[in-house]
Image (spheres, rainbow, N blue to C red):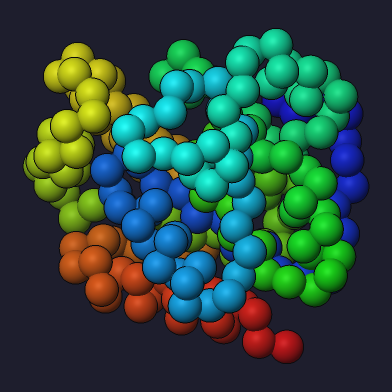
Length: 197
């Protein structure tokens, strides 16, 4: 649960995108950012960078003590413990973007999205899913970034996340990433609709 409440102004538009590992949300978000000009909230995490990830672009990589300091100071809009690592959204960039009338995209998990939804129910909440469990497994194996036991944990978590997302009533939009260009187009259209005055 978040620490002390930090009010977030709502002059701009908030778009929260979630989905299990392997659903393709990161690729979709990157392309949506390129095409819409929306801003991106860089999350903080205590996990180690994966090959090709850049600190400050993909995540801000922190040690546990630095993360806990942010959390205790109430400087996180949301936070969660996932696969043994902490993840969170710094509140200040979100506040600044919304106060200036910009569209801000958060790419966060379901736990975090539900926390944000409790504080900002007027945002647009989008959940990305793979077309099947088999396709999700194939994508996770194809990434070759994790050992088989971690992939199995991610698959189990994916099922739980999908059930939680559907039951929450938080996500008004479920996008099936069966064909990447079509999924990107659906998300871009949602963002552009939200951003219209």
